Amino acid sequence: MKKVVLVTGASSGLGEALATILAQKGYIVYGTSRKPAQENHFTMLAMDVQDAASVQSAVAQIIAEQGQIDVLINNAGVGIAGPLEVTAIESIQQAFDTNVFGLVRVTQAVLPHMRKGESGKIINISSIASEVALPYRALYSATKASVDRITEALRLEVGRFGIQVCAIQAGDIQTAITAHRIMEYAADHPAYGEVFAKVAQKMNDGVSMGSSAEFMATEIIKILEKPVLKKIYPVGKTYQKLSLTLKKLLPAGLFEKVIKGYTQS
Image (cartoon, rainbow, N blue to C red; front, side, top):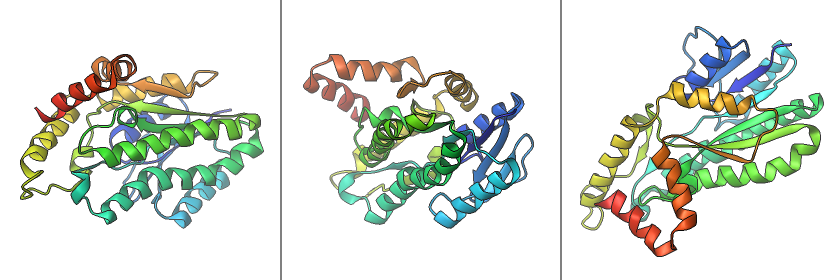
């Protein structure tokens, strides 16, 4: 029997690559987007992860058509960057509502069906930034750290039902995240304007030099198809994954200097 997969945020980037490759491999794939366009290899549904009714409606349609959901990939997310001091609370709420509460809404909608089937896999797309907090990306790092802790606890809650959960700590990916990132520039702020302009450019450069969405999707699918999932998998460029090791090995003060120099020089 073919496995049924739900991929949130599948209109472009990593989500689209995941959905496309999974469909090509023979999975029954449903992707979601707030404004779904015509799909080629998989079925697109309208879903706004910030809207509980929208989430429940999309999940109900999949269950009505397929009777099950075997894999959930919580990919929908938004970037946010800017000096914490000047970032609007409304922007912070938007980031958490998508990256954290949205993930929870979809997971809550899917879990009863996985429990009924006594099996399932949930893949939460996190970020290396969840472990390595970068200046001017504190809030993005906070949302992804939340994803990691949710993953860590949820594994222990649902493992007895035959459901496995893991987080993918992704490095930079060549996607449209730059265009959609919530940015609080404070361009004319005497304390932050000049330095943040430099950091913002480095962020954009990092995305443009990141791994391709297809490469990342292929690596994530390899993990998905493992019989037993570990808690967390870093995926991305070697130098980005190396930062996780350096944080463990270097004295805290030295590691901070390394990060400060990388992001602000």
